[in-house]
Amino acid sequence: MNKKFLYIGSAVVILAAGYFAFTKLRGAEQTYTFEAAKVGKGTISNTVTATGTLEAIKTVMVGTQVSGVIEKLYVDFNSLVKKGQLLAQLDETPLLAQLDQSKASVDMAEAQVKYQKATYERYKALIAKKLIAQSDFDLAEYNYLNSQASLKNAKSVYDKNRINLSYARIYSPIDGIILNRAVDEGQTVAASFNTPTLFTIANDLTQMRVEAKIDEADIGQISMNQRVQFTVDAFPDLKFAGSVSEIRKQPVVTSNVVTYTVIIQAPNPDTKLMPGMTASTTIYVNEKVDIQVVPGKALRFNPEDAVYEAYLKTLPSEVAGKMAKTVAKSESGNTKSSFIWIKNGSEINRIEVKIGENDGINYELLSGLNQGDEIVLAMTAVKATVATKTVAKSPFMPQRPGQKK
Image (spheres, rainbow, N blue to C red):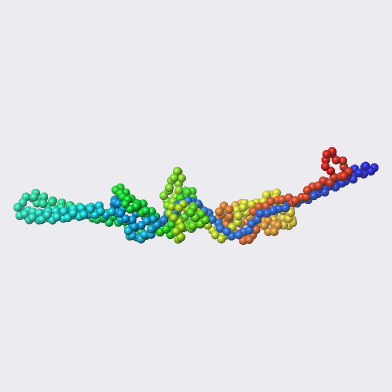
């Protein structure tokens, strides 16, 4: 009899423990976590990036039109020069000799003209009295006209040699700074076929320009006066400002890649920027500052149906019914509309909004929400933490051999 009651008691204990564990697990509730953000102000911008080269706005190559030996240099690298300032002088000795020679030719031509003119006048008087043959007069007239032509030729050679002598002194054509000096004193320069470059002068390094190469896929977005920021390797922590001043239509084809040159004005008041530097440019093709923005993640968020239905069951029936009607109404509207879920306490609601420009991350908010509204970015269902299940065992039940007590 005692043994029978012992078995019945053990069974009751086991059933009670199982029921307790079942109700414990069944009663485990789900909680819902939300990733949220607030509507705030920000900047929407779309950009085009490109590399370019810094150049002075105006660069002049100064050369020589006559050959000779550099006798004297009056400027050097980085020298500041004024328009009309003497930069260099060639040896004038051979040029002076040529000028003297041409002057002698002029004198000889003038004497010839004087002689032929006198002869012509005498023959003219004689032919009028028919004292000489017509052929003699014609010859005298020819010689006189020919001497006049020879005089003009001699004078032109003289003027040319005089101008060449003036070319022996090389002057600056602009105000600026010497970027490059390509010759030294005593060096011979030859101007037979082309003009050799002696100096490179930049007019003003406080105003620079960037010649940026824009890909053909992006050139359609570029327009005049767009804002530009760029950096150079020499000052990686500094950002320099500029603006688009010229869009050249001539394509540049390199290895079957088509680019277009865009000129960017770049003020350089501190003269930190130097010609030839490589600039990494960012052109702001579309920019809106201090506007209401929302993350793109908020527009893409939509809770899973099963999660949302389970979430509604955790709310009071009146609230859940109202939320369900709001969602159903918004879904029955225009499918092209944009919606955002907002969070108000424990409730979330779907709101239709109007959006504008975007930069791929944030969107411009035109209407539908107010600044400071809390918007939902993600929703996750999480089971509540359940204590470790302990199965009650009867102290009277036999155990398998080797099992821990």
